[in-house]
Amino acid sequence: MRVLGIDPGITRCGIGVIDVDPMRRTSLVHVEVARSQQAIATHFRLQTIADAIERVIATYQPDVVAIERVFAQDNLQSVTTTMQVMGAAMVIVARAGLPLAIHTPSEVKAAVTGNGVASKAQVQAMVARILGLAKPPKPADAADAIAIAICHAWRGTGLQGATKDGTVNVSLSGGVSARKKLTPAQAQWAQALAKSRRKGAVAPKNGGY
Image 1: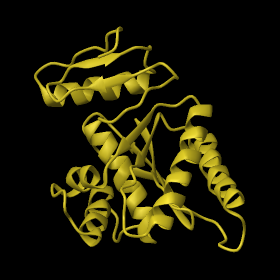
Image 2 (image 1 turned 90 degrees about the vertical axis):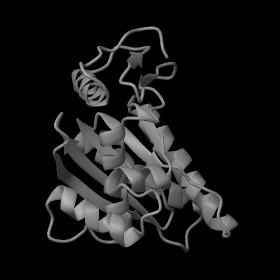
Image 3 (image 1 turned 90 degrees about the horizontal axis):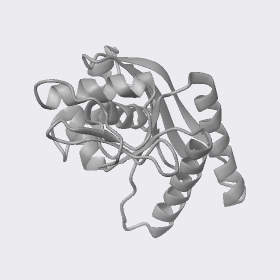
Image 4 (image 1 turned 180 degrees about the vertical axis):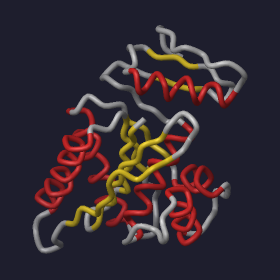
């Protein structure tokens, strides 16, 4: 399964693409950081980021997109612009007709390192180890985007749906449900994840959760 991870940010937006097989072996496909100029108006900065995400989707054809959820911080301006980037990215994903997953920072840290309060350095080191790289992708936003993609590939939770009214979910007990027919890659991923959560893969069934 091919996963696109996005670490939203208006000055630097991490974008990473990975391939993951049913045995959870992970390989790096593409990584970059989309940048926007601080001197231009916000809507043009958002357009720059959105264009970069759209280009990566068109070029690398991911099966699913994962974005990190933003939490309130002391810097309200930073949270606001990051949420705007997140919204712009979600629109691009919707236009591409792709399923979208949203993960919290603690979920990403726990999936990659086993520790929900791991430091950025620990996450970056594990990303390099998982991908078999000599050192983590730079800058940090790039490594974070890959970590988000790995989190979704390994956990499979937080999926928002492949279409406007579609949902797919792999429960902790290994149950799989989907309102819309999954692509072959999505079905393979869901069955592999289900098998890892209980004995025997469960085929997706229509009807939602």
